[in-house]
Length: 502
Image 1 (cartoon, rainbow, N blue to C red):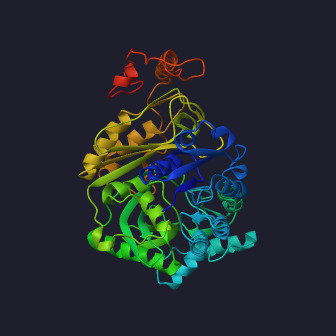
Image 2: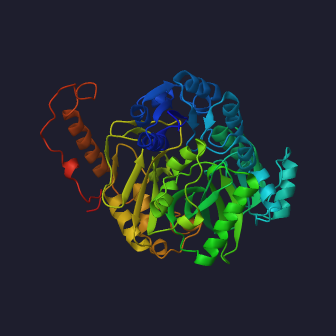
C-alpha cells in the first residue's frame, strides 16, 4: 500500500480524498494555486505545495509543476479527483514514464474512453447501442455542417476530452452552429486543455442513467448499480439519486451487464462510470465513459456500503477486487444536491466573495462533503461548485423529506448560493412523483426566482460576521492558549429556519 499520495485537485473532492487517505493510514500532499493558499484542503493535508498563479492552466493543469511537487515530497501516487487532468491521457502516460502511480485508469484505456469519439467507435464494434453522431473530429466547419444536416437538428456539441457539461451546446438550427462550435471549443480548452468537439444527435428529454463500475488489474469487474442524474441545468447535473425510478429489475440487470461489457471492450481499470440515455420507450444508448470518480459517487456509497475512494486506491496499489457482482446489493434510497456559489437573481451567474457564516446540516442519514468554511474567500477563477449535500433513507419519499429538512437547516451567508433553488426542486410534485427527465428544469423552472428577501439575508450576514469577530483576534484566529469564550451564539443552536418568509 502507498505511504504518501499527492492530490492533484482542490475543493471538496480534495478534502474527500484526504479524509479517505487518513482512514487508510496514508499521508497526503495538497497542491494549491496562489488564491487557494487558505483553502480547506491545504489546511487538512499533511503537506502542501504551491504550484503557481490562479489560472488553472498555470497551476492545476500544469503537468510539470504537479510532477515536480510529487518528486519533491516523495509521493508515490497521484489522485486526480475529477476535472482538471483527471481524464488527460497524456498526463497519465507521463506519470507511467516517471514511475508515479496514477490512481485511475491506465493511459491506453483512458486515451480510448477519454476521447469520446474513439469510445463511440469502440462501443459500436462491441455491439453496445450508441447515439447517432460523428465518428471523428473534423477540421473544417463544412464537415460539421454536413454532419448536422445528416443527423438532423437539434444536435449536441460535446467536448471530446472531458465531461461535466463543459463545452456542451444544443444547436437547433444551422445559423447557431458556428458560434456554438467556437464557444464550445473555448470552454473545452479552458476546462481540459483540449478544444476538440464533435456532434451527436440530440435526444429530447431523455432520462440520464449511469452505472458505477470498478475494475481491477486482473480482469475482474463489477457494477455498483445505477444513479439517475436527469435533473440538469445548462447540461450540468445538480440533483442525483439512486436507485432510478425508471428501471425495473430486468432493465437494471441488462444495463449493468452492458456497462461491464463497455469496461471489457475498453480494457478499463479502476473506478469509472458508464453513462446512458434512456428514452421514453425505455431504449438505452451508450453516452460516454467518465474515466474518473464522479461528483455524485456518494449516493452509490450510501446505497451499497462500498467506499469508492478506498477501492480506487486499493486497485491502483495492485490489489484484486475483494468482492464479486453477487456480493453487491442496493439498499434504501440516496439523494445528492450540488451546492453552487451562484446568484439566482442574476441568471445564476457565479458568485464569488467571502463566506461570512456556514452552518452545515447534520443528523441521521445526512452527509455533507465540502471544501469551504466560515471566513473563506470563494475565488472567481474556478467552477463555482462548493459542496454536496447527500442524504439516505429507507425509501425515496423519506429521502426527499430528509433532503428538504437538511436544505432548510443549511446556511451559507455572504455569497449567493443555489440552496433555495434546490429546495424548490425537491419540493416539486413532479420530482416527488419521480417523473424526471433532462428537460425537467426547462419545463418547470424556466423563470424561477428566489423567494428570500436580500435585506433579511444581509442583516443575518452582518450579525454572523459581528459575532465571529468577538471570538477572533485581529488575524481572525484565536490566540494560542486563549480561553474559549463562554458566550453561546444563536447560530450554534439554530434549528429549522428560513430567510424572508413573513
